Image (cartoon, rainbow, N blue to C red; front, side, top):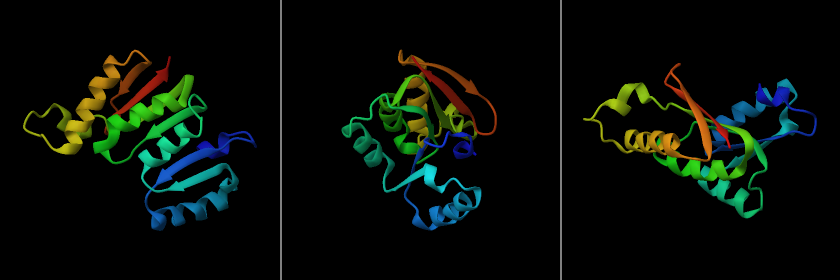
Length: 144
């Protein structure tokens, strides 16, 4: 849907590790006529984000949506906040993690990482944010 709203010269960089699932997605991108707007990068997202930064694309993006391996959420934030321009939007999905983030007995890697992300976002002077308690929680940030 995002690709449908982009101007003709707009594009989305999409990160994924599954060729199997993205091949399914490609069929629908073709059907919607947006394949030319989607730059799919297969491989670990942190490597892709680091490559974008190394390529001089800091502050180049309008938007980032993170819904990936939860253990790396804090690291995704550090990269995405560099890549998104001032006034741009960053979205983080699953920030309530089925309530596990407030369960002191849950010390799993994923839950701990989401707690770290939530605290980091709260204290990050580079963003303004609002946590939206829909679904499993969505944090919407505006890059200052």
